[in-house]
Image 1 (tube, rainbow, N blue to C red):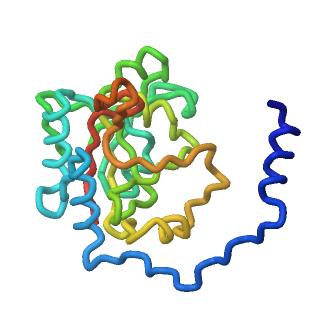
Image 2 (cartoon, rainbow, N blue to C red; image 1 turned 135 degrees about the horizontal axis):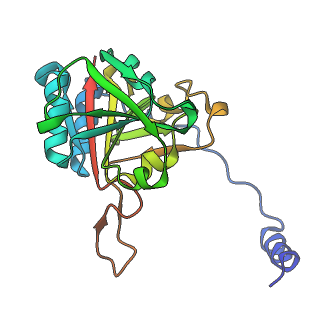
Amino acid sequence: MSRSETLAKLRKVLLGKSNPELPTNIPELPRFKDPAETFSKQLKKVGGIVLDSRIMGLEKCLSTILRKAQSEIFVWEGQDTLDAHSIPFSISRTTKNPKQQFILSNHPQRHVTFPLRLSTVELTLERLENTVISAGSADVAIAETGTILFRTGLNRSRLLFGLAPCRLTLISRRSIVHNLSQAINAGLRLEESSLVTLATGPSRTADIEKKLVVGVHGPGSWFVILTN
């Protein structure tokens, strides 16, 4: 059926019908006594792992994630992640083009101490495919659903976000809002982004024979560290 035929049929069906009245009593959006606690509970329900840096300490949180992911390396999206969460570091640069580099921190025996010693290596497809843990910071998270909003931008690769089997997100408690409406109005600078992703826990699908499979379209493990 052509486009014109489809539109003609729709117009015929709608002929003489008035638009439905919009509701006047709109229910209040949910709010929570402790958004960070609600966010943690909701994310854990869908398989996310939430660690509280106020209780464990940030170094212990990072060490715990390395052990669970069986890796010794974090691949960081950029220095802005470390700056945003007051993580001390030193960095040695070995690549000339900052847009074509990985920022790594290597932790023998899966033990993290500060300051982090960062190094840069050339960004290649092979290194990207071998990345186990990609680490970044979230602009905002939603307590109601345990959802994290990830925004692409300069040095924030979609591939680094979605290809690594394990994802680490650091988020400040101040960035956790009550509901989706607040998240949309949180000033995300969407005009600077080519993609905004709303992610709730590890990737999962049941498209194939209605069997739940984790990690097909994105990270199979999702770690979140709550910071101040």
